[in-house]
Length: 181
Image 1 (cartoon, rainbow, N blue to C red):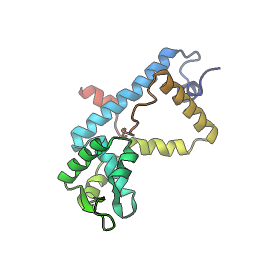
Image 2: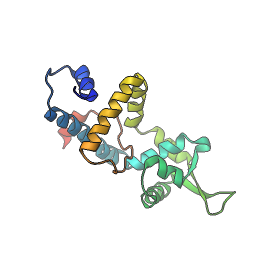
Image 3: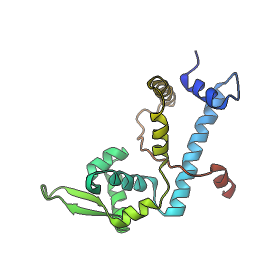
Image 4: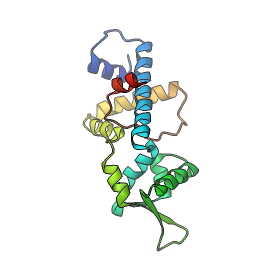
């Protein structure tokens, strides 16, 4: 029996009756290419990396627009030194502030500034938010089928231990970006 991912693709596109493995490879390549192009576009247009944008978005959703570097690290699924670099760059642009905690002087609160909030409001919606909204509309059964399909692909590629930071954004016509390259 074919993978549930194949049924989803067939239901969406209804292009081919007999799908083979090369079609799946092409679909994966399309996803990877779209993410890479969108990442470059955001970097060029807004002078911000996707992890920096995700950090600002995370802070915006937190109570009082603040969190800790540990919470940010866990959200982004990145290592501490990478998050430190992200926070340093955001602080240099005055989009965040680092404030010592009142309770524990060893801990620092990371706070989204007004400038950071204004910048964030002017940037495009993040693709993983758009995808999350669409996934929430799926039935639990379809969601589980999709999860199993991706788990198969991840296992086939032997990438179970790769960091999985949500690094994609939406709102781009990929054909236009490819024409510019």
